[in-house]
Image 1 (cartoon, rainbow, N blue to C red):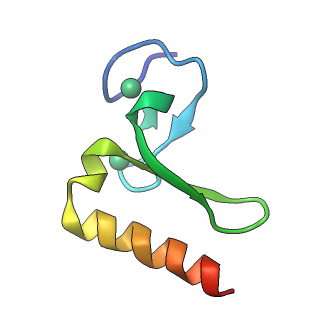
Image 2: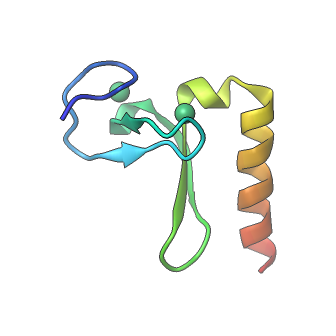
Length: 66
Ligand SMILES: [Zn+2]
Ligand SMILES: [Zn+2]
């Protein structure tokens, strides 16, 4: 499997929840558990986009309050 962001081989597969690309661990900017079974992952590209970053922060904030 190849990372859709940096085209390197993936050892530990991650998926960005904001652009829906399959990415490698080094392309993950941040990840946070949002429930017992779900984790939200944001890649470095999406982190650079303010609307995406706001979305990520609002999702992770909501999970902290719950
Ligand atoms: Zn990558
Ligand atoms: Zn992304």
